[in-house]
Image (cartoon, rainbow, N blue to C red; front, side):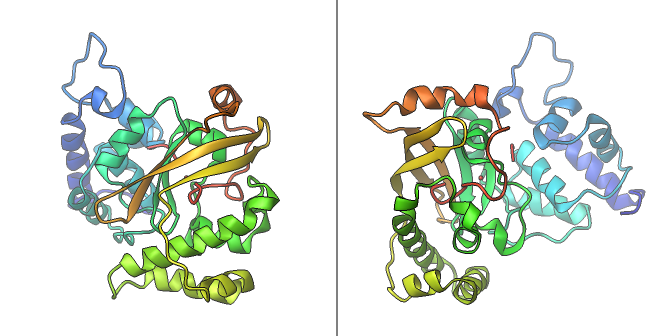
Length: 299
């Protein structure tokens, strides 16, 4: 987009500086270090947390450079632990529309982010009630694949599960029917919990009814049940079969869930999960892979 020379963009830079100054490194999982010349985060630290280049972030704080994308604004809001009101204000300053609450660029609850940052030794991620991955830690990427960068209905893992065969590759075929029923029951419960004026869930359900006879048949069963915990069998492309427990922590309004994965008792999952850090992200497919319902872009 065009340059950022307006008064509003100058305010954007000032706002970023003010938010950066109030955060302690330990708040976002960074070492404090003995010699810090600034009370809050350094510019390079914010850039690292947001997945931006240092030069680009410096330009933003100067009110110059190009207009930040919605994805960059969402990443900055997470890096700076902005409240929902502060996040909306940042979109306003950047001349970008505030995204829907449940979309891929939705604001992640700061408490969820703090917990995610402390779960450094286990795969974990935050998803919406419609199974859109908002943020995942590196171990979740290594286990499930990078789920960032998806838009529209495809951002929901439930939609991909019923419309893209490759989305099921990380589950044994014998488990597909059970997972399908669980996804549909959970989606019905999530849709019922939303405000009656909400259109996002209805749009997703309508698209699934049109695209998937399997989904339509299961939807007709009227099963309703939130996914709160689950024991899963996964087929990792490098580690092979492993069994994990997937635990859910719900936000107060039910719109977001923190998922974390632990080894199933009585299996060799503990040793295999310990290998995730060395496996890294090279082996797991991206958007076709598993994410949120059994289920994922770093904060």
